[in-house]
Image (cartoon, rainbow, N blue to C red; front, top):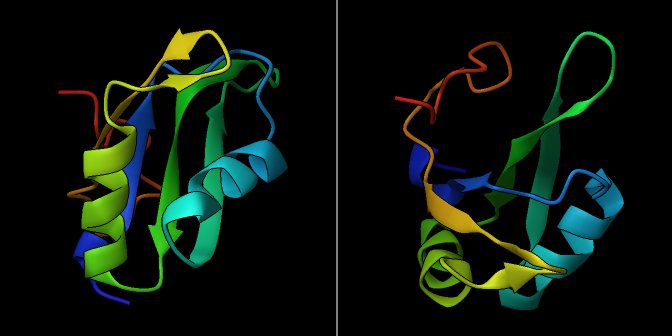
Length: 94
């Protein structure tokens, strides 16, 4: 799994769970991992990461899902450029 096989998803609905994220994004390929970012008290930061088996699947997912809707939230999808995305919570927040 290369670094280009993980995408960053922004503007997620506050209520969305990791299993919903995995289910939604599996429309475009095999999901290897899905992680929602939360505050210390457990509230959603409304962004997360989805890992695909291949970079091609991730690219297709970005093209398909970017600026689409997950429930009522218009989401933004982009290539995650962080190597240690679980430790770097500001990965996609420039």
